Image (cartoon, rainbow, N blue to C red; front, side, top):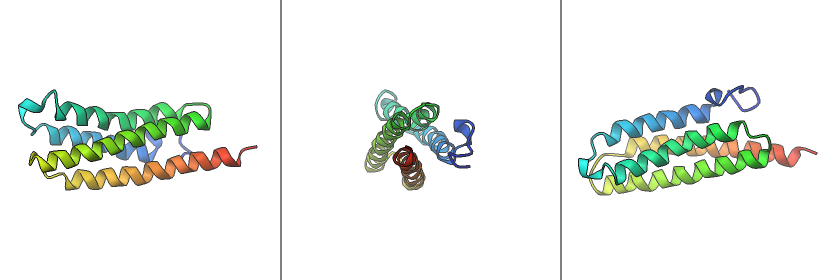
Length: 125
């Protein structure tokens, strides 16, 4: 379902994929060392949650400029997660290839959604 027909943020494919990513992050981080509970575990979960949360918050903003701002915040959180996945792999806490692929998909969808909002802004009188 695209942004033209979506009635609520949960209708958006990009939100659904981002939410699925968060669930995967929670499953992955349960196996992290207990010493990371206030470190990497907390940081990656916070950043992951920020992605669908900002998509949701931006969905109902009235102006397209506000919508784009929240999508940009989500994109920043997405890149933060990308780093944390690299770190988790390098620390040998987990194989993060599957989550990296999920994150890539969310990134592509989010970029497309953001561009569609931007285009609409430019085409409005």
